[in-house]
Length: 238
Image (cartoon, rainbow, N blue to C red; front, side):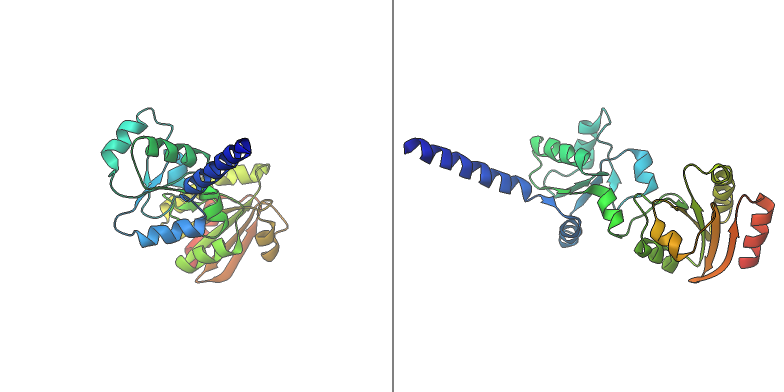
């Protein structure tokens, strides 16, 4: 009987420990709400690489690469140990390790976002990109598209696939045009990964280009195009 009581106590202890450990692992909605509740003091940390961060990140997040050899020294200079820390990565693995590492260093209040940035973007949550060209992190959704269309007066959509030769040839041309015309939002959508959007726009050839101005589709083109020709088309849209 005593043996069973000990086993029961250990099971209960492990259960309580798991609960206390998991209470700081938050769903994306709870993570967002907790951030809002701690506005002004929350320290939001993106622990991915600088390249991943520049491609897209949560608003007000600072990039502290967990794979950096100087990660410990950096966080000691960047973070206040007395204030709550919110961490995320791409899928949740690095942020889980980073959260454990921070707690071992004495940070008492550390929250980790389950599912990471991939889950955040696939759930149509807003994010910021350092690039004029918006490349979806996960499969693009109609909600993602609606958000971009509503916040940009002129959007150029490039429907491509990874195996498409002409698509690869057009990539530097499209990027150059986007860099030279800051009023144009270049949106690259993989037609295979985002079949729902490709279907809505009736995309039957790759590459397909669509221009949306003030929320309305005003032009459509297909196939490999000359840079001058595409610039002439865009010039008429301004």
